[in-house]
Image (tube, rainbow, N blue to C red; front, side):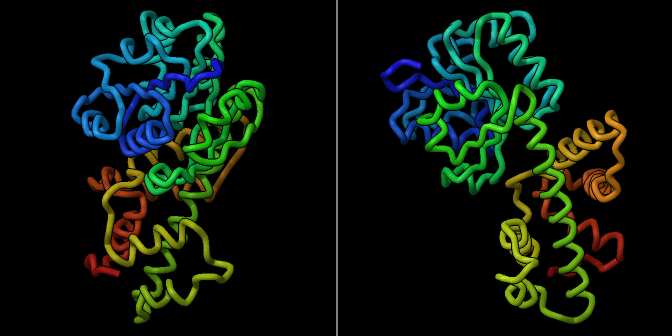
Length: 299
């Protein structure tokens, strides 16, 4: 890495990528961003971020390329297909794929990067939009430890980074994270549904449980969303399905049965099938109400 502030390209400026780009620019890094839907990137100009017309233009002079695209197939297409981003990166640059993608895709992208002499990390995050805005993300980095260390000052404005192993390990850690998050969201939704049907005030039940063994970041943030009926997406349910199905496919390929994960995946799939895939994943409480014919009473 050069001694001067590295030039950073951010590929993908959606719910997570936009605040991450803004934080990097606010920390003094020169940042260029690109998004497939240009309108989602233009607001970053007032944060000091340059907007590129194409992904190739964005990475042309970049020392670090951070990717926050929606899925494994999109990452594979934009990054690793002939003529894609990897083919246009400077050989000494570093590629950091922070999207939630399958382990196999993370390894494939790392191999494509290595073939051009480009260091690569799969470094997905947890913490949602709030964590991205506040620089409080948990970053799970797979790849070489020396590359993680070289990017310490780049990761610092975004959150806390942990090197978890070789290429693919970051993606695997994120799958584990998503199983925990999805299962906990469903458990919170069930508990508040039980409280509601039993005649208790769900808001007061949530308040009573804060600080106890049932407390967690998911309980605090998503329990509040459920109580208030605020399902504007921080993490859309359709992406939760993407992650749980990817985790379960990985498990099955290794002879594992994950019964809780299977049921959680089924609940989120039903939510998406009922047209709520663009709602926040805390909206799974709506699916429980449908299952129990609660009439959609607000919690």
